Image (tube, rainbow, N blue to C red; front, top):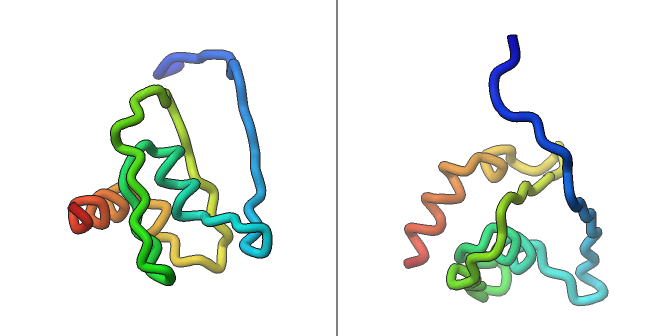
Length: 83
């Protein structure tokens, strides 16, 4: 017995960010999630919450990064704190 819906992936894209080339993971995460994220190092707040065209996203983080940042509840706490 299978639970859920199986669906083909219409489009997938993987990008690597490089700080030396101006990349910012907080900006990218805010854009992909269509939410508000604050970069604690630069104190810049990125707000893409008005964009509503994203259907699904996920963020993959390295094993050495605190895994609480891969938890949506933790990200929601930060989002609510920023408002």
